[in-house]
Image (cartoon, rainbow, N blue to C red; front, top):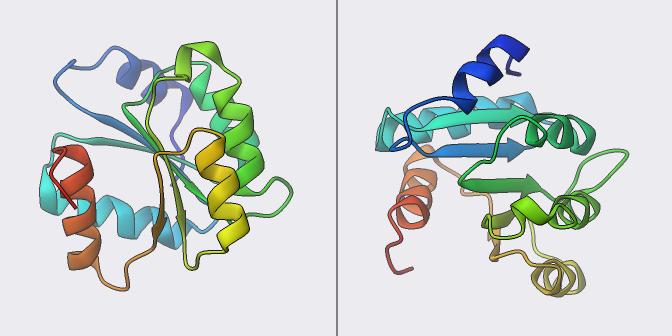
Length: 143
């Protein structure tokens, strides 16, 4: 699920109480799962999905999300490279970025944290577990 340029412009001017979440993941099924979890938590959250780092960088020229979730295992530019490119953008330095993957490699985890990722999250195996994880992040609850 990708967003059109018109939708992107509408989102950029949306209600400031809404949270805008950018998910960078090459697996479009993950987009649907993430959206379903967000809708279960709070229907007012806007999810913008990008299927590649380059697409995410294009989106980030138009808006500033409240949170960024980046899949580690993507073709062409992996999640670590994507995080590095996003963190080079001064206006996005303060935006919390989370690495989001099916597994943790200790070396990649350390690199991501050094580059400014808030955390390195394992993709939950159920929507209800993802809801719990996202609720804690969005509402800043303790883990």
